[in-house]
Amino acid sequence: MLQHGNFSNGPVLTLRESEILEFVAQGLSTKEVALLVGIAPRTVDRHVENVRLKLRAKNRTHMIACAVMEGLLDVDRNPPEEAVNG
Image (cartoon, rainbow, N blue to C red; front, top):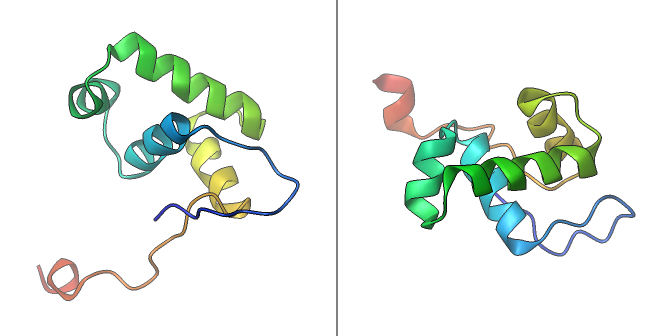
C-alpha cells in the first residue's frame, strides 16, 4: 500500500511516519498501532500529528485522502474476492 521512491516535490515522511500512516489508513486505532509497533500511544499520536502537519490536513480522514493524492498511499481498487463474497 505504501509507495516508496516518490520523486514529487511533496512532503517527505520518515520510515516510522510512513509505517504509522499505513496502519492508520487500515483503520487501526492509536492503541492498536502502539501495540503492533511497540511504542507508546502518545508517540503514535505524535507521529500522526507530524504526518498531518506535513500534509497540511485538517484531520485523520483528510490526512489519508491527502496521502493518496500525494502518492504516499496506494488505494487497492480491487478488494480480495473473499472480502466481496463475505
